[in-house]
Figure 1 (cartoon, rainbow, N blue to C red):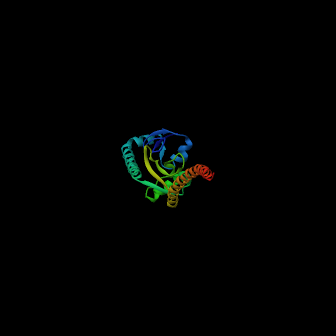
Figure 2 (figure 1 turned 180 degrees about the vertical axis):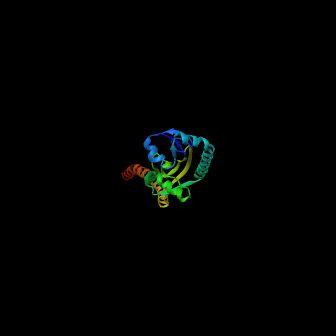
Figure 3 (figure 1 turned 60 degrees about the vertical axis):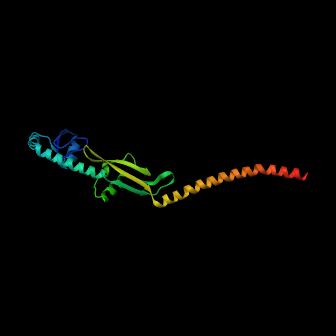
Length: 194
């Protein structure tokens, strides 16, 4: 079915574009939601006549998308999660978590527009792509940190472990030296007794 887009639709086109799509997609989604109209003669003439108005609408929508992109790129989202060994999270940070955190900051984004190949499962800094509109993609900075108790425990354990290892190595060396000296000392004691 040939249709005329009334709104930007991803993978199809922009406002005023005439495209051909599957009949079911047009009848069940695009036409009922007002994103498109049927491309018959009268509608094509109507669109040509009102093309300037549609162009203004397209520019306005694009400007709103750019403002939203800049707003998203200006944010840094921080997530605190429980951390296990080697910086791996118990659980993960998902697109839904990111969408909820953005909503807390006053930015409403559909979680399906957040591009995550897979959930974030480790501590660190990540860049997440957010599809704002057709042709406009924002890059959001996401920081995942371990909860404070785990960080304090990990920091406290690490130096002790190193000190303990150093002391153990020093103890082994001292024991080896003592073991090496004892036979010599015993031999000297025997020679003095004779």
